[in-house]
Amino acid sequence: MSKKKMILAAGLGVAAGYLAKKQIDQYQKTTPETALKNAKETFKKLGPISGSWIYMKPEEVEKNGLVYEAYRGGITRNIDGDNKQYEFYVDIESGAVIDSYETE
Image 1 (tube, rainbow, N blue to C red):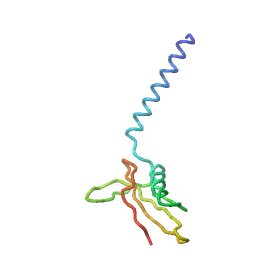
Image 2: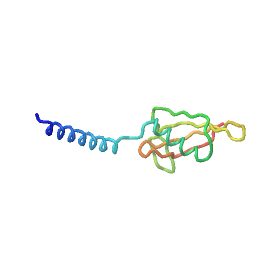
Image 3: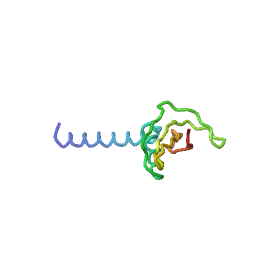
Image 4: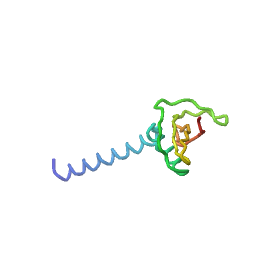
């Protein structure tokens, strides 16, 4: 096989792999790690975060009459010397925070 054909074959392989990855990413649901990252970015807009966690197993959550499949997690923030804890739910499909509330 000539060098030209090998380079052409390698280029076509890379292009096919790239297109396949784009297709897979389009239909892949949000991972727990990505969900936690999205939630942390949202909470960081309100101030610094001192801790966070997320359950790896999705749960069904009803919000405003709609049922979502979501990851549940938590954030700890230090506000005026007090640690405040918040729980949140992140939609698996979109990666958006659909609910959050302060816990005791």
